[in-house]
Length: 158
Image 1 (cartoon, rainbow, N blue to C red):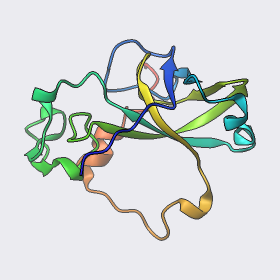
Image 2 (cartoon, helix red, strand yellow):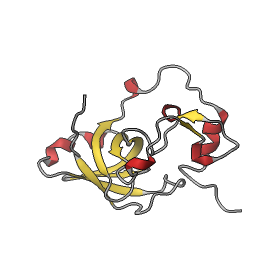
Image 3 (spheres, rainbow, N blue to C red):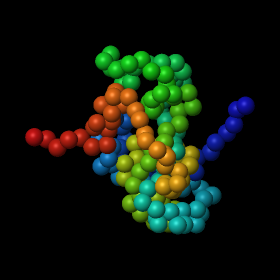
């Protein structure tokens, strides 16, 4: 059954171009949409991190993936289904990132490490609570660790 989701805000600042790596140093703001008062962010600054749910709005419908592909198109990584990776070309184009809360000012949430670009529609904002984090060991295949090696921070130049 189809449904409609309206943005609760938009990303302001940070990067203007989609890039694969080095998102850890990116600082951006999430400005609440009209109709959301500053009180909607009340208490959020007491948390260290927030989960930001957003729309990969720059992915055109013809680029949507529904089957399997090699992450980043790399032939040395396995063919895996779209639901076994976090690529932007997903069926509903929904992204999710846990970022550091830098501060809250009125109707604006400032974050670091949000891998969404300027203008991106934000669908939801949730505080990170330890009770919702994974319980038990987290496992992942080797290719996922390789993919993430420089995603947040590039190694210092030698």
